[in-house]
Image (tube, rainbow, N blue to C red; front, side):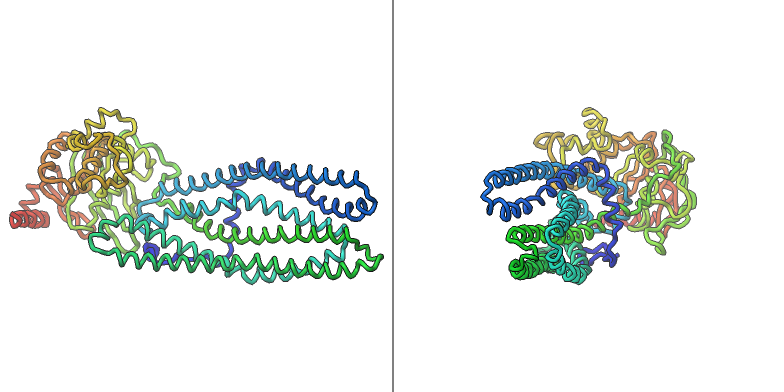
Length: 597
């Protein structure tokens, strides 16, 4: 799929979707009381600040000509009081809005992360992890300024415009109409750049996503890069993606910067007209234009265009935020294909009977992986799955764990359809070790205890001893307290598998799934491990996937999987006597080992 590539852009939305803002409002609404207090303080301080030009007008026209010092000091005192109230309100506003903004950011990030925990494997199969990460971190962070300052400032500025217009009309209607002549020009500019600006920010977010995806991929694959001397080629790709991001950013910013100069230009022109006309009208006493009126009015003009400039900046931020919100909510809206049914019940304590009834499954429509697969496993039996790569062995065990939903048919455990029970109650009773032995950053003890958070240190050590991991762990500098990096880069592939094996065993499951559990373990360790496994598998229903056929000879049943179904099944001896597909596979491995010697 195209979305699986770091150098392919995601689909852009043509229309400005106001529903994104409505959804954002649901995160804001819990804090409406605090917003109301802040809004009251900011509006009251803004309204009081509107009186200052009036004070200036009275000082210029009345107090100074009459040498009324008491009046001058009175207006000065009022101005100081208003300034102190405005400063206190601003301090409170900054504190509260930042707290609210970060709380909302935390909630959005928590929602998207929690949703990612529930999405099926197929979602991660289809997307580079870097593109997912950029949504959780970068895109959410980009909303911070909008939520902390943008919303409250916008409401305040809109109210300020109303206040200012009222005061301007009170002073002089003709001068006010001249000032408003610039608004149609500004609206034309806004309409001209609106769509282009939004599209530019959408493209920029795509380029950022591509760059982040490639960086994540390059870091994860650094060993392969250096092994095949791909450093120069990778640097060229990075520079190309980084250059595309830079160009997209510069284009988007260029549109942003059109708004500010446009507002400034219109402001300067209208102010110049007011000065020219105001001064010419002052010679006519009947006009009512005085020095104080002109000074007060020009002060209001400055205050009139400042919030418009701020609103233009907010509009820029809003367009940027919308492009990010589209991606954030797109992730949150991603359908959880594997989820609890509305009437799902708790899975009873598992005994271990597993049944597939005419199961069909495909990852992509039209490309079936399993076709009409049926089999039954009794509690305590060990079933091994063998066959060529891509035949569907891992798919079968993934369906038992319900990591995917079947297309048709049923999977039953103890006669219970697993689609009718909660995922947590099902998986909590299963032990699963995948092909990818993932190691988390932390101590070795913590990594093993991941299979059972309530396990004691003694139980962790016992599990490690069972899978022959104890000796190599104790040889490390701090034993079980040794810190390992993400993905276990300090450990060998075999050591990572043993730790993952101990993690699965610690869960003490009734159904145990081992997918290539011994593929990275040396032959000597494998022999020791087999002794512990023979004891461990007693009383548990187990499914083993292995390409090393020596590890599955003692299985109660071996199923050869190919062409979307079970080609043959039986014990090792029975299948060898048939001399079918399993026999051919076994002999090919035997011949390979003989030739290797």
